[in-house]
Amino acid sequence: MSEQLRSEDEGVDARLDRLTDGQRECLRLVAAHHSSKEIAAKLDISPHTVDQRIRIALHTLGVARRQQAARMLADHEAAPGENPYQRLIRQSPHIPAEVEPAHSGPAIDKQIRHVDRAGGSGPVSSNTEQDAASFRYSLPLPFATRHRPRNDMGIGMRLMWIVLIAIGATFAAGMFMAGLESLARLLSG
Image 1: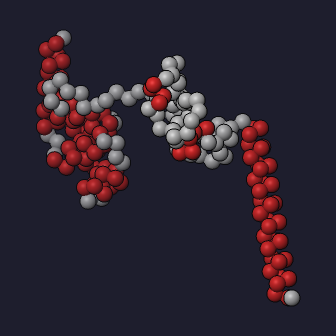
Image 2: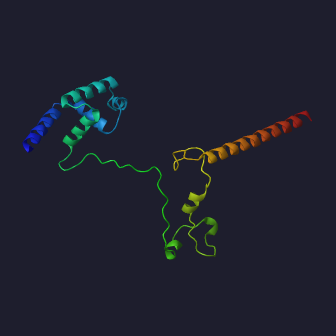
Image 3: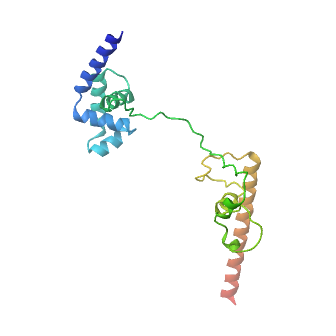
């Protein structure tokens, strides 16, 4: 069984050695998750040439997918014992807020205070500039932000934003009309 695996590995090595430098470069960029157009731009060749090089490499290696060929080349070129691929781990896009430590005292005295509280007397609190930034907007914004890339508002919150935008637009239109009326009085009088 181990002899069969060894002969298969030798066969793979021989097939990988038959790849041209251009095919190897294309497969390295495939391993870096580049598209054919991106590879063509990097190598200053046409996307058709990239696809042709990859197609011939797939045939030479006897695999069906670009990523398989790229992984074979990366494994072949990696140092012994080195894994060129890092295992992907699914992570939630929403990172929960840090839990405030249960202890208070001298460690809190070292935190940066708000400018209006700097040097003031009063009880020591844990309000820092970083804490204030997280509570600045208690109402979620109706568009995507860096911290909230998805729209996960409920129907009530969406309706509230529609009403608030309508009120704001009405107020703005009223102010515009009042400005035009004042300008008309100024010009006529």
